[in-house]
Length: 168
Image 1 (cartoon, rainbow, N blue to C red):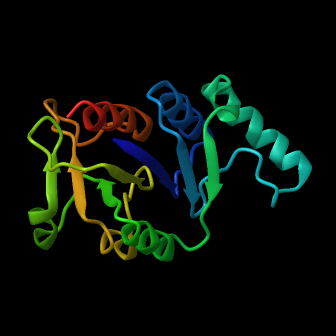
Image 2 (image 1 turned 45 degrees about the horizontal axis):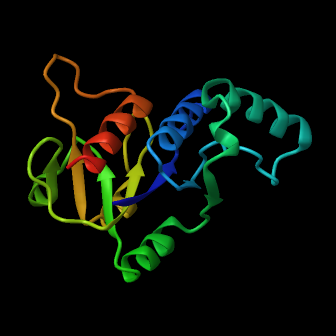
């Protein structure tokens, strides 16, 4: 399975770095940034800000920031539509579903449909994936929680989800 990660509105540079490190370690070839996610080597930033963000991302990425292909996506809705047209399955890593979204829920660890190319969308650490993006998802992937907490940190959840998708 080929997976492209989308980091949409991830606030923490350290989460971005950890996700890049996990992606590289699991053989993920591409990461797309959208929304206000801090980006490694963002040419749109003033040099001193770019240096600061690069340092923070690199602190947890430990070199993976130079190994994983990264791209900026300005129009995520349009880009997801293009990815779907290219026959890719669009999945959101999300556990807070509205009743109408429940039929599209996949539970990690259970039998998943066959998928060759996947775009895995990660949302903001607290609010998750916004409605305009949720409407474009083929599935919602949920990681079953066994404790009292309702979710994992986004970088931890990404690692679990990627491992589960790659080994399903």
